Image (cartoon, rainbow, N blue to C red):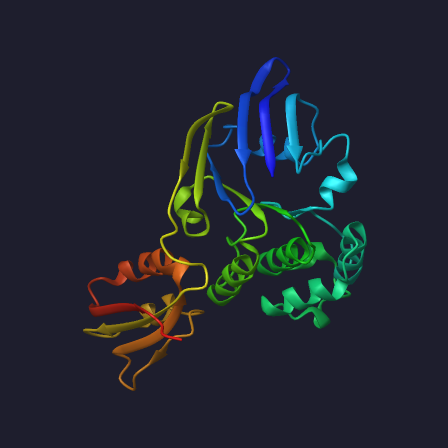
Length: 285
């Protein structure tokens, strides 16, 4: 699906990419990790055809520079920093749909699944939306097209727990028919989404490892937490996870998306002194 062959890029004599050669196949979900300056963003911009470069890049056999319109029509891109667009949301959706020849209602449908109340913000400028709203809309635009490649930069960072679960469901629906590249500074933020890890440092590939899926993207885990005593801070920490509490607030029950289990346990671990029992079990259909 994607081939990088001896890819190199130099800015003012600084070698930012140094002989990158990679093959990424259909259905692979790649974590592209590395520190700032490692070359991740430059690699992505070469893939999107934004930069000239030495070597070759091909998506489904097409050069992203020479066939930019066709290539971009097959890529869904979610940037780390939302662009400061003053375009109204409704116009942005229509414009984005027209670029790739998709029905705007597909974008509307995905946005609604993510919990975005589009009808109330269609006339609002994109730049005036909250961070979470922008992220949901950009994801909806990226997934609302028949893209064969999804390139995402920390896509779930600004999503609430419920929207994250739905986001995982949306990716699971496409995982066998698309290639995903998810860029991040930290592996733990994207580990639940990927089956291959590529680490960059100083413009080179220093790690390329395929990993087994620890849990399916659609898995749902039933959770029960018993407390030795209650503190309001614990309830506040679980806000957004839609847990229910017993009358005395000592037993909490709810469901979490399987890929979110480590993130959830990290939150609960702050209250270890309060927790007397915790169980996680995959929900039965």
